[in-house]
Amino acid sequence: MDRVVLRQEEIARITRRIAVAIVEAVGGVDRVGLVGIRRGGEGFARQLQGELERAEGTEVPLGAVDISLYRDDAATALPDPKIGPSDVPFSVDGHDVVLVDDVLQTGRTVRAAIECVLDYGRPRRIWLAVMCDRGGRELPIAADFVGRVVEVPDGARLEVQIDTAGREGSQQVVIRQKDPS
Image (cartoon, rainbow, N blue to C red; front, side):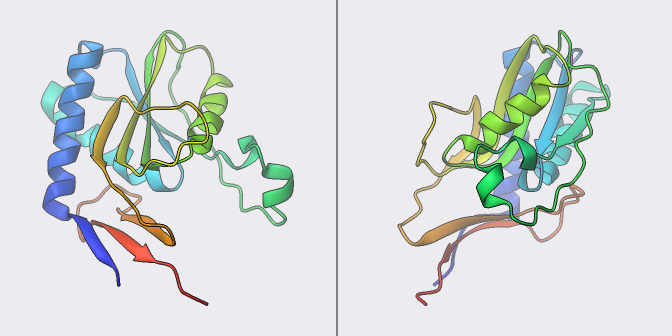
């Protein structure tokens, strides 16, 4: 049985709260750039961008990275990879880069995204913002900004449904039971 753990209103509230926390931690957004991790983090990053721009009245640059080639299991896990482009249209040098993802679990995706960002330059600092932290770390990685910690039972997965264009619409976070077959 699927269980909704976050509804659209809660996601909007979490997005506003994380945007405020980013402004407070970094001291404004003058030298901040957001980088969504494709696929799940891209829509959440766009929503954070909108909140930051509304709150601060200034444009916040946004990019996205595809970590497929940076995965530590790329040679074995990707027999027919569907690799999308990474696009970071701003200089990361000396900036605070906020990596954005929907779910943090093992930490391997974040490690790969950090390597990808470093190929673009040397940021002053890399922060991590996630909608949900479901635990299960395999690497010592922790998010700086977390929307909600969600316990997910064995045999289930956490699915964040946010439009990749960042539009508000039917959005939710659901715990889905895996098929028993």
